[in-house]
Image (cartoon, rainbow, N blue to C red; front, side):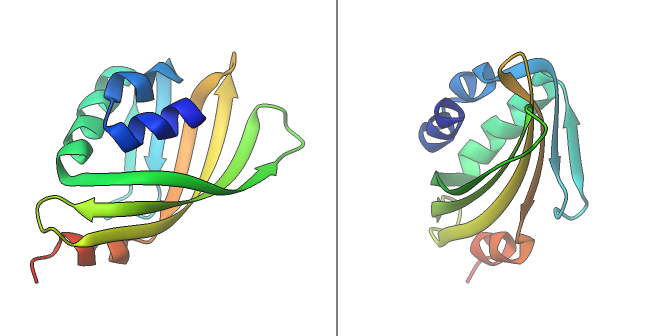
Length: 123
């Protein structure tokens, strides 16, 4: 997890995706419209484009171990800025992570889309 989050902070998409299996599923449940991306080849351009808009760090604030050994729930925060507007960006997230063979297989991420839209909007 640390390697994936560190990759997000440095916009190193290869490092981020190295933590995932090839047939991954990434979901942002509160995006408008809700987003579901399947496969590394589909997720790579999404992460790359996000790196052109956001510069931020992610910090894990809570870890909830589950009875299912390949399931983990995390709370984390972002701190940074939106490059296109220069506005600060700080959001809170809950991520439901599923693993296969020690690598990320599925993520369902929940964040406040209103915070994102405010930061991306021109003043």
